[in-house]
Amino acid sequence: MKYIAEGATITNRLLFLDGRVKENIMGGGGFYAYTALRMCTDDCLFLSSVGKDFDDFYGAWFDKNGCSRDGLFVRLEKTMYNDLKYFPDGSYIEYSIYGKKYTDEQLAEMRKSGLVFLGEEDPEELKKQSLKLVDFVSFIDEAKGLYTSQALTDENSELLIEHKKNGCKIMWEIPATSVEIAHEAYLKGGIEGMKHYLRSIDILSINRNECSIIFEKETDEEIIPLLKALEIPVYYRVGIDGAYMIADNKEYYVPMISTVAKELEVDPTGCGNSSTGAVLWAWCEGYDPLMTCVIGNVVASYNVRQYGPFLDMSDNIREEMLKTSEEICEKLKGNTQ
Image 1 (cartoon, rainbow, N blue to C red):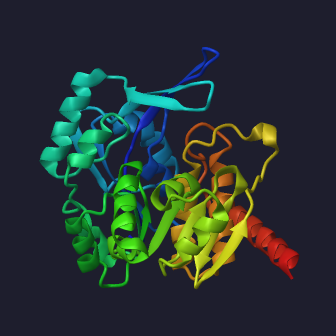
Image 2 (cartoon, rainbow, N blue to C red):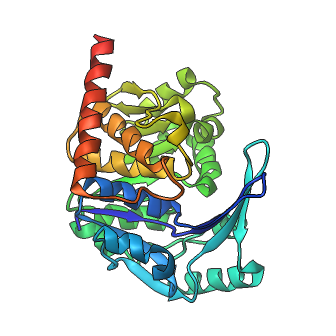
């Protein structure tokens, strides 16, 4: 496959403050990134560790959209399924519906196989774990682009460097558990320390909050020059304010894009992952930085229209998405002239 998204598959049960419950919502960062790739191209594959019940939740979507299951590692009895409980300040907690005992057994089985995909059940254990790419690194050999949020251990970095020699571009979306590690790399070595830490990465996806922790800066005006200094393309996400594509010491800003009426925007969960997956595709296909950033934001605008991923990955939707992106890009160019 030309494009690959690797990461977690996590079904969610959403628990709202008003007592509403939404069950069996497809999700997980890697899965959302894959749905973005699938909107952009048929030639893509999802790599994930899943349970024997995967098809109960994801089978209809995979079949409807002609998606391959060749990258699924069926090694668990149950696919991860979390309760996601929201609080008044917008924060949330997430935990397995199967309880701590099953979560511990699940993590142990994943570690035994050398393939670890976690939600938020045990971040401290994830920090201790030396993650391995050995189960799927060979997929990189023939790929044009890979989305991943695996931890950048020295072992992982060297594996990525070795296996992308045929030209595969690695898009890394920094996971929450790596933010403090990146901060330490910056404190010890400054920008050069960060560049070494990111040595295996071709494109970085990161948000404002993550940057504020790593660089100890608060504003975009302070953060963007530091991202430029990394000397790799960066997709810098700034929440409801939109996103920047940073390349060749320049930044290209795209405000948040809505392609439906506001009342039809249902759930932003996974929009960061989906926009990042789309940016990987657009960049590898040779779009300029502004258009790349627009495509990422437009694909996210489809993701926000329902709980879980957009349901229709047909050619008509792809053509509509690209046409919308072209029109928005032309308007933005006109506004800057």
